[in-house]
Length: 248
Image 1 (cartoon, rainbow, N blue to C red):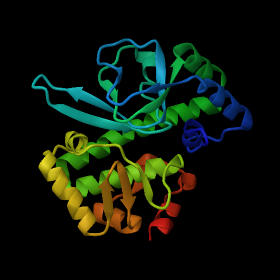
Image 2 (cartoon, one colour):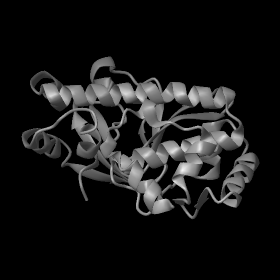
Image 3 (cartoon, rainbow, N blue to C red):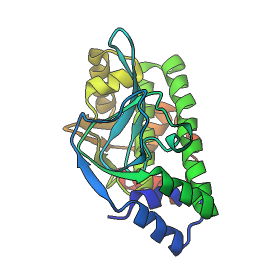
């Protein structure tokens, strides 16, 4: 399967074959991490930057009451903590939501990439800016969107991001997110989350079950969710058009 890091970064900058070889080499040393294992905890000082090659992880903050707010989902091609190469200390935790393939990239490698390869630097900067752009969209969803629209919008976003790295086939993709994790993301109860997912299925828009998502009609789902992918800043090569054609 094509390297998801390269697939993702090519939306942010024009990469040559030499750039691709460098990125391939930087992401070769992979390890398997089981579900529900912390990749890093809040306050830690990591010695490397972690990259998700396969599987799902999430960023979260834990409140003193024990309640959790999930702030981002990490999918293949996503860096968990690229900013620590500069900032040093984590201000949130990252945990796997499924078995994951992870690459640990030394800080020195990241610094070498940014010091010596301008196109890769632009691509990494683009990836960081996209991560920052997603958070305001989630805040708007939590504050203003009705629950059903909130879930539909998240499904549209995940479909778009996963299509961009070749992880959507015939409108379907792996989605190892539990209803509890959906609830911790969207500010809903588990019961309400279940009800909203059933509504989307009954409307023949999307079905989420058995750790899979099936988008029955991507165009209709985006209209229902009032979703526009502009904030993801993906090129026309993202494959989302193909998702819609295959889902119809």
